[in-house]
Image 1 (cartoon, rainbow, N blue to C red):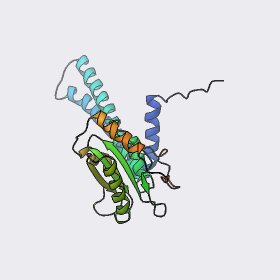
Image 2: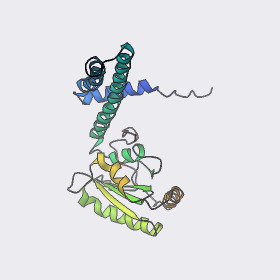
Image 3: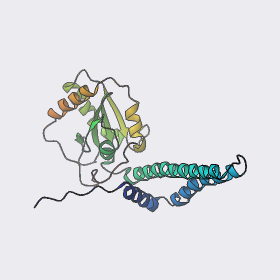
Image 4: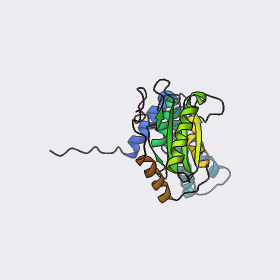
Length: 232
């Protein structure tokens, strides 16, 4: 018997799930959504009745415009609050960087939710992202403890692809670290020097030269289940 394929949830179902998840962690989301919806609707009613008087058709068009604007604002505000809630839920957990890399970046990046180097004792880890800016190494955890891991991985990458620019970031509690919610923005700030084909070639080269005996992510958070918000 053929395995039944699971049907993707509809758009409204997805929005309802996002709202329910956000509502549990954000007590202000309901009054905020009500306010941003009713504001444009109220303007759509008051403006044609006071400042810009017209016929019934004009009034209906203004009200419809207010409703549509209110719905749009609700979606924007819900998306932003849901994104903030999602980052708060995974920030500081093992594998949070991997969740963002795997689920929060556009397809122009070649990444993995699993680290390329890890300290099993401290759970500090280094992740790798390959994009049009070159190779970016992201250390997760203490900046002091993960420095050696990052330096070792930098040398490994430099030997494999010596002509490619290597950047680095630290995501963690130390001073000068990048907050998890800013990771995607920081990655996209680097100057683009590679084409899409070159990105794929570099990623394949590094994957083929993967160091033997790589250590899997330690027990803790499963980045595959902790979904960071997808880019809009």
